[in-house]
Image (cartoon, rainbow, N blue to C red; front, side, top):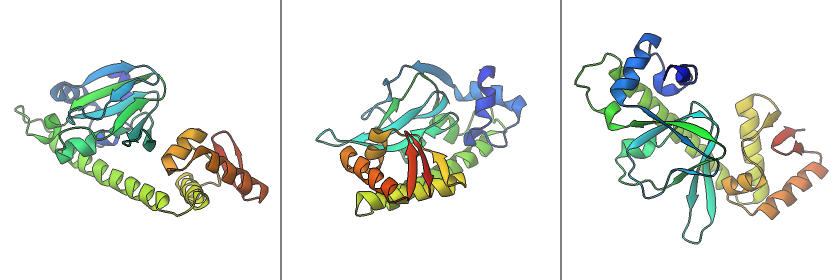
Amino acid sequence: MKKYFEILRKCSLFDDIADENLMAMLGCLGASVKNFHKKEMIMAEGEPAIYIGILLTGAAQIEQTDYYGNRSIVAGLQPSELFGETFACAGVKTMPVDVVANEDTEIMFIDCLRITQSCSNACEFHRQMIYNLMKVVATKNLVFHQKIVITSKRSTREKLMAYLLLQAKKNDSNSFGIPYDRQGLADYLGVERSGLSAEISKLRKEGMIECKRNHFELL
């Protein structure tokens, strides 16, 4: 487990946890690590919502598929980020979304109850972890609210510009990369890929943006 310490220190779940306590903590929580290949399902809709996942290496995304098979990307995941915590903490019986590997990944799994319930060993870090988990859930709620604001825009152009302006603010720069290809961005915004590509072309001709693959610049 020690080889993952560097990435775990960047994970919000372990904020203000001393390094000397980290190994004992992982043992107390029963943490386990599993490998997944690109396109493999990490968590599937309908599975018990009891685990919190931490992305250690690679990349993944949270997806939702409707009755007709239309896919929507809820969020992208990068190393040190958590997933599944909202559903596990809410007591939802089964996962309402899929988590899929975008490339070969390593994932750490922790049973949520091992965090939220009192430890028989009375570990000193437990209270700090519960506080950290509350912060993570609250932060995720803000992120999901931002997506609702973006996807509630009426047109593809408005949705795209709202997303790009948010990314520029997040990166504190008018030049930035996004974690999606064209299809992924279309799925995130809830629009058709052809319509998205057409709007990107129009914005480039109007001199409002420049882009190359997943890198954008607001002019």
